[in-house]
Amino acid sequence: MDYQKLSFKCGLEIHQQLSGKKLFCDCPTITNKTEAPDFTIKRTLNITAGESGKKDVAAEFEQEKNKTFVYEAYKDCNCLVELDEEPPHRINQEALQTALEVSLLLNAQIVDEIQVMRKIVIDGSNVSGFQRTALIAINGYIETSKGKVKVPTICLEEEAAKKIESKGNEVVYRLDRLGIPLLEIATAPDVKDPEHAKETASLIGMILRSTGKMKRGLGTIRQDINLSINNQPRIELKGFQDLRSIPKTVEKEIERALKNPKKEGEVRKVNPDFSSSYLRPLPGSARMYPETDVPKIQITLQQLKSIKLPELTTNKVKTLETEYKLPKYLAEEIIQEEIDFEEYTKKYASLQPLTIAKVLIEIPKEMKSRLKLDVEKLTPQEYEKVLDALNKNKINEEAVIPLFQEQIEKGTMNFEHYKKADSLALESEIKQLVEKHKGLSLNALMGMLMAKYRGKIEGKTVIQLIQKYKK
Image 1 (cartoon, rainbow, N blue to C red):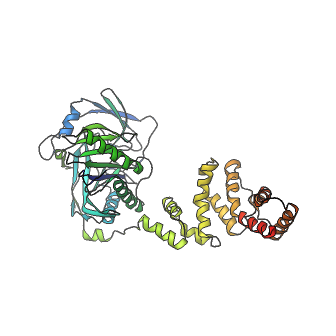
Image 2 (image 1 turned 180 degrees about the vertical axis):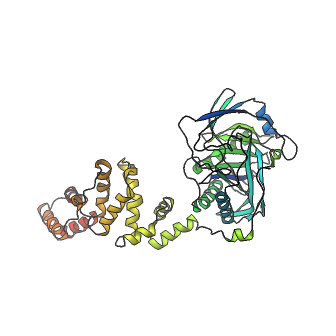
Image 3 (image 1 turned 90 degrees about the horizontal axis):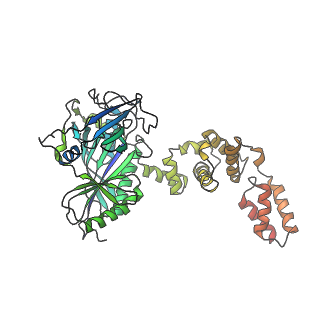
């Protein structure tokens, strides 16, 4: 497609949960509850006017459905604040500090005074009927392969409750997730094409993870896409979790918009087959009004100067590649798994960094995919035992997989069984074997030796010795 001729406009909204406590109370951020709730409450939707004095069109649309909302709550992660029976507490200072840090990493201008606002929520996902949100910074940007993408706003807000089921006019939500600190990062419509949308989302995700203060796992980060073509009204696509699906979904939405031009903006749900389905009208500006229960927050220059910015993940990867001569894919895995690689190289100084990386990352992945073994059963102490044996030259690298396999299947590792073969004795045996079986190929001789010495000798050494005596 010629996206320029289509007048393609596209921007992203990234929503990322923060770790720690909830935004306006001291409840822990426990999520994905599966047990029966400790208690439930019911609410109905009653619309109020926004700051402009008007009622939001999307809110009125939802109220006409006359739905009842059932909320499942838990004593260990919900309190009266989530139930809208108690005013919000002071804003979570740790979450605020993280929001400031991210804003600086995104080259944004932090506002002098933070005013918490109430944003009307129309689907029942907040017990109060509104979501607390605060503008933290404006006018940021990131550099991409296709130019600068501006970041007009960065907000800190409350996460919504998780929808469990709908039955008739009743919708059930679970409140374990409600109130978790959530960063909302909105880009300008500077995205050039579907692949650029994926790249932009990936770069912002990398910056967020670099802080080490984000929640990890399924559902902790979500991407929404706002797009339009041919100067049609904006369409908001909600619900991306896998970045790989972004290009295909955007392409399908463009095809749909070309066939069925819209006169009004819409919010649409992304489906598993990359298509989208109608959710509701696009919200207007009449959904915001000030939160009077939370005082304004002053941001000082001294506070900003005290923030120590982390090294970006991409820079950490480059450092590992350069300093330890590691392939990029291994360096990325080491950073993602938050492994203190420098400490490992100091502790096992006789080993090549690549060998250490293979033991920690590559070999377990191979065992999981090829041998279908549950490598999660291996403890850090068992990895250390194998690395220590390698470092002291007691075993070969070929012994790592069989030793790990023994540990997973039998609960023990017999290092004596994989003790390195005596090099002089091995060379003598290979010489005799080659002379005895002159007609056998290198692979056949190799197979005979490896069957006998599995894990005790290096394949490369055996090949070299066979070639030496077959001449």
